[in-house]
Every structure is written in structure tokens, then in C-alpha cells.
Length: 507
Image (cartoon, rainbow, N blue to C red; front, side, top):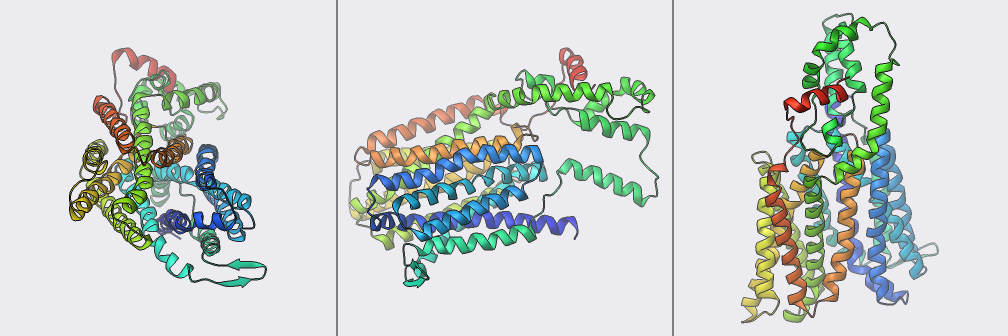
């Protein structure tokens, strides 16, 4: 099977993973409270069950990301994570006690840790110019799952039969349904997913194939030395290790630094790969690898993007928690009206992701991020003015509510795609899985705290929305002051740094 076909099947399988994760959220969330009530659970158990899912994902994401960085494989990790989803959803279907239900959500949440490995894989297997487009498509798949998920509840609520000792009703059916879906996805991963080589390795493979087609017996000594050097050069240069921005050395620029040393290297070409040069460079890489990763996550632009991840998800989940009590209080919405509202909101979000998918080809990610923050600021200020104490007729109040929700749903895809794409570019590709795990853990923390904030202050709307506006203003200022840094790192040569960079990264 050729590479392009493998790539299409692999990316399609990734889309299914995110689609099913959205379906699971949309299928289980509407019925889990009533399910817990049948098991005589206290009201606080709903918060425990929802938080357990986010908490286990928060902890497992960096671990699976680190694993994928070390092994450069993701297929085994996805299969393992899917296994947690399968077991967790089957336990949810069994439902003997509230503690079994809590444990089921805890296990299923571990399965979401595969997301960090997948984003790391996408970063390594896509070109930087295509990354925002790919991320937008993947995120749109999850939103599509959130959109179509409630439709499955239409027939799941009609279930009323037994499978052996297990009861299948409108509360347990979602667990059985997701159990079967994750089994199908497991088969799809086995037969339709490949660990594609990184983009740089593919370039090397293509050069080798061209040599073979031209009947060249092998690469020249210059090319051979160049390949060896590229294998042993650490990704982080000396400037990166001390925390400076934009010091990634490309192979062609490193080659220019090494031009004066090539004769010495060629004179030692008879030595094996385990030469003193290779050993010294490997020791240097192993010494600085962990410290450089920590310092990388503390860089200004990385902190800004992590703040964008936390604040936008915190505000989103707080608003989602506030919406249902608000519509019940002012509009007397029931389950049907709320389902229609969420469905229309999902349509707006998917349309936003498709718009970002197109705009990311024309504009930079930082500009897309700025546009998204503008929408979010307008939305929160609108909610602070009009929704904290609605006034006027019923139709005017409903119009105010629709405008606020529409602006929030429209701005979310811009911020989400831009910050994920930028984060993948300003962090090291070698540790992308771990870095994406940290990013998703920050988002997981936001999805735990956001509902707690929104749910606890439904009677104090000015405080709740006011803090959300303050957080967005703070994020906007951070992005404005760091705007010049929110780009893909480039080489910045200075006379003072050329010598040190050539001695540390171009040995």
C-alpha cells in the first residue's frame, strides 16, 4: 500500500476517534444525573462523576505523550487507551452501584489521554504550513460528534430489554452503545492506522529512493557524513537551553556552520558511528533533554498559549453550565428546547471550524487567535450587560440570549485551532507528545473548575460573568504584548551567538 493511501486511512481513523469522543460526551451527559438518582446517589455525585472523567484524562495525557515521544509510536498507545474506554463504558452499562459508575467514568477518562499522543503524531507527520488546517479538521470531528450525539438518544431512550443478567434501559443503553462503538474503533485502528514516519524522515527516504532509481551505488561521503551528523545533533541548541526564543537550527544552516570542519570529519570517516564526537554529542543531548523541556514550557509564548487554553475552556464550560438554568428561569425551556439549542450551537461551532480551516491557509495563526479573542470578548461583555439581569419583552430577552451564545460559539473555533497550531510550532517536535499532554491537562483542569464556578454562582451572575470578562481581558493583553513571539521559531544569527551555537549544536 502506498504512503498516500496509508496517510488517508490513518487520518480518517483519527477523525473517527475524535468523532466518537464527542458522541460519548453528548450521549452520556444528558442521562447520567437521572442514572445516578436510580442508584440513590447524592447530588454531589454528579460533580464527582464528571470531574473523575476529566481528572483521569488530565493525569494520563502527559504520561501517554511522554511514552509516544520515547517510542515514536502511537498505535499501541491508542489501542491501550481504547481498551480503557471499552472497559469503562461496559462498567457504566452494568451500573450495579454508584461507585461502579464513578469508577467507570474514571477508567473511560484514562482513554482520553491518547489525544496528546495523536496531536504529537500529527505535528510530526504534517508540514507546519498545513498544521492549522489539519487541527481544524480534527477538532471539527469532535464537534460533529457533539452535534449528532443527542440524536442517538432518540432511539436509546426507547430501549427496555434484558441481555442475560443486565438491564438495558434509557440509562444503561448509552454505556452499551459506546461499548460497541469503541470495539468497532479498535478494529479500525488495528487495520486502518499506521505510524507514519515524520516529515523529515520521509524527505530522507525520498532522496534514497531517487538514488536507487538513478542507479547510484550509494551516497557520497559528504552526504553520508551529513546524515550521521543530523542523527546525532540535538534538536535544542545552546540558545534554546538558556531560554532564548527563535534559535532552532535547520540542517542546511547547520551545514554552513560545519563547512570548515568537514575535512576533519572526512579524515575520520573510517571510524565507526560510536566515535568520540557521537558519544559527546549524545551525552550532551541526554544531559540537556529534560532541562530543556522544562525550560521550553516556561517560555513566554508557551505560557501565553497555555493561558489561552485554560481561560477559553474555563469560560466555555462555565457558560455551558450556566445556560440550562438560565433558559429554565427566563424562557421555561424543557429538554426538547435545550436539545435544539445545543444542536444549533453545534452547527455554529462546526461552521466556525470550517471557516478557520479555510482562513488558516490565508492568514497566520496569531491573527486568527486575535480575531477569536475579539469575538470572545464581545460575547462576554454582551453577556455581562444583557444576560446578568435581562429586561424587556420575552422576544427581546431571547434575542439578547441568542446573540451572546452565537458570538461565543463563533469565537471558540478561532481560539482553539490557533492556539493548538501555534503551540505545536513553538515547542520542540521531539517532545511534542509530552508538551501536548501538558496542554491538554491544562485544558482538563479548566473543564473541572469551569463547571464548579458556573454552577456555584448561577444566582450571582455579575460576579460569575465579571470574572470571565476579566480573565479574557487579561488574556488579550498577554497576547498583545507577546504578539511578536507567537510565530514559528526562526534562526536569528548574531556575531556573538554564531560561535557558541556552532560549537554546541554543530559538533
